[in-house]
Length: 256
Image (cartoon, rainbow, N blue to C red; front, top):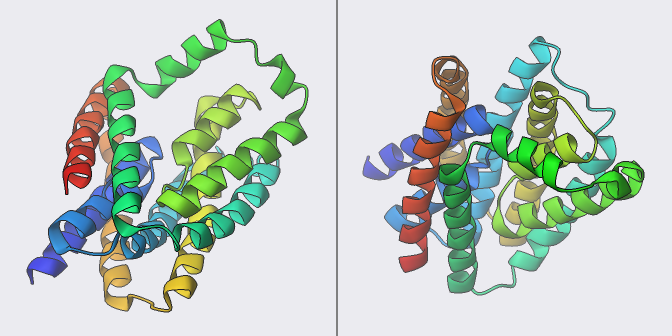
């Protein structure tokens, strides 16, 4: 019963995080499974990616209903990311579990620090003002393939669906408006997470039915809840709260 409870909490938290900021389920599901239930990091990443599929799909549906998705412009990113995610998942299968778990913890920790320092919308505006991105904007196909490949590799190796990174690329390089960038990024993340998780399960030769049903169901509810909660809180408060939780989880995974 304790294991079921922890998986439900992890799935719900992943849905909330994805619904609020488009972050991957890896920041919640992986540390819970590895630290509290003793799962192998590779298995935990596969379950995290599968949870991502549910959370991202629910979030994408919400944005689609408001007309805030433009998948045509992000198609090259999606194709590149999916291909690279499959390659990355096979690569991570040969990594030492301790190394893989520690690297995942570092990713979570850095994500947390980033969120506590500044909300993503402010970071986007400041980055636009500081750096000249015309080189990438004038070569949108090249940029989409390049960044899509990098995001996909990260997805396959670390289990991070890359939602925030996709959001940044769509905003900086392709000059999407914020709401459309978020909606498109979570849709792309649903595809990268699906193929990444499938590759993990093929390599591992095991499909964790119970964990996926529990985590996926909770993620569905979490993503729906997040949409309502986000309307009543500022981005600054949300970023700090989520960032603090990420830092804690990242440290726990690294120390473990």
